[in-house]
Length: 441
Image 1 (tube, one colour):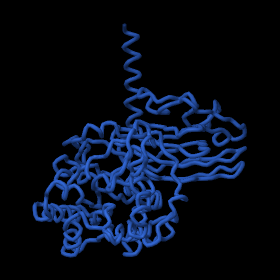
Image 2 (cartoon, helix red, strand yellow):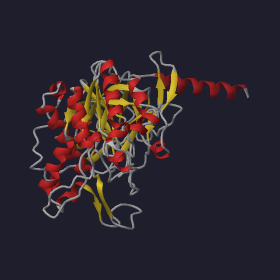
Image 3 (tube, one colour):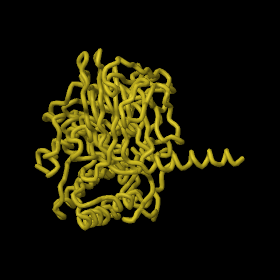
Image 4 (cartoon, helix red, strand yellow):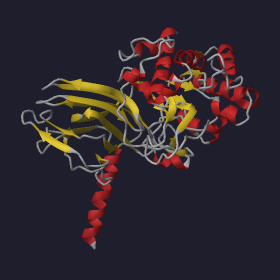
């Protein structure tokens, strides 16, 4: 009896202390381990008692080529694999060694709910590359400056399954030949944080084929300098974002030098609200609060739906919400990213039929448990979300927002009149798929 209690206490304390830890060094591969690193093999399944491991170990392979203990071996699989670490909320720099000391590799890295960090990283035979990403990890607890709990975000039932509210960091390794040698995680206390607020067109969507511009945005910023913290959620209005204490969570985390991106309109309009029924008042209150906290508010007008007239021109289905946001931005002297105007240009350049390639339009049985066709004129697939993210970055660059100095080389240039070729868009699908439409319309 006493031995069992001691064992339980030891496991509990080990898990508790690991959960408070913020710096980790993991050596992926075989049984040889670099000094100071935690060994990770193909059988290291996630266990909360130890605080780390793979979500699923089926199909994982440990390959050891000899040579250097750290990069001479690696973990790989012929399907996406997910590595999770129990870790306190915050911003983290993650250094990854990718490649094969005796072969080639091709790896795409996403985190949490399919948040794009690295795309199609290829290494030649015998080459290892070190890449860095910066990630925001969050939980639903609202804390004061002393770390004491003062509230909680009211999550929707579907959010309890999300990978970004689960008190841990999850990294997705994907692509044709993902090969991971090591993972080093360290806190980042200095990165400028872009807090995203909005609805299903901004949220980090967990399931294929749905996606939003918010989860593509991190790909276009320099790691270590900027991190994206996406607090958007499907179906939310400006008022609901307050009622569920989502914005309270942001207010208790945002710091001087950070940014607050605000995009609402789709659901406000759908709910029968008008721009005069609290929308303007709340918008101005958010601007004032952000400025008081030393952060920079940025308005983003809601993008258009795929609704065309007989002349193949986009029809406004958002009432006066985009205009109201433009007016408030001018009145309050805040930055405005006019995604509404850019999306009109983008979709009209595509045309009514080709634009379906940017939205969730798929024949029946394209995804598991999908007996009927998907035809959604509001929500985007990964290609559409990527194109809209490039519109957002283009506006940041064109307006010379201070953020523009940290736009990465992943952004070359973009013209909404000339959309990227959908056939050349690279997105190896995740294993999480669901045809249930997100909240909102």
